[in-house]
Amino acid sequence: MTEPPGELVGVGRAADVFALGPGRVLRRVRHPRYDSEPEAVIMRHLAASGYPVPAVYDADGPDLVMERLDGRDMLADLSRRPWLARRHGRLLAELHDRLHQVEAPAGLRRLFEPGSTVMHLDLHPANVMLTSRGPVVIDWTNATAGPGGADVAMAYLIMASSDTDGVPVRLRPAVGTVRAQLIGAFLAAVHDDPWPHVPAVAEERLTDRNVRPSEATRLRRLAAEAEQRTR
Image (tube, rainbow, N blue to C red; front, top):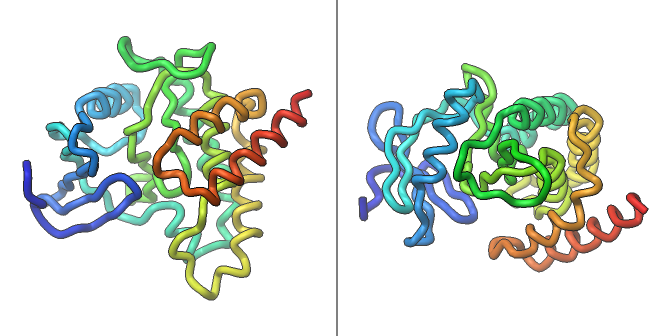
């Protein structure tokens, strides 16, 4: 596939999503040499394990054809219903706990030691779709094998350090409170301990070309705070 197949229905920092006929979308990573096949493999493995992911129909280079999901993502839902921050934090913790019960398939790249469970490494509210069949986790481009605590650490760092793009003007004064409630509920409910992993995970996060300078500054501060906490 070389041309956009239909209406643009989603835009992320690294990829775009296009409509592709009834019930399907095409997710196209902007890096032309990206290979979607490993992502398709891990999503099929998770689906077979009973974990909620979109159905995968095809993978070809940077293109991945998947089930089109209804509903909206958790981050968009928080923008509309910020009073649900604690509930969403607990749901996010449940999704992490469920994921970390899934043994990684042979051949999945390993990152951080020890551990052999599946890690999403980007499992935050923007990657949880709230659909009519329940929550569904999307965007498995970073999936690796490793310890569940490192995955929790990455989610914490992303939520605590990321800029909040597109927040409605009326909600901007409440962003700090909503973020704190979401993160607090998530950390209180999740099973795996993130704190021993935060410094190493922050270093890994800093290698992401999509991390902005303002976010990098926050990441370094959070890593330093975690090191003090674990001494």
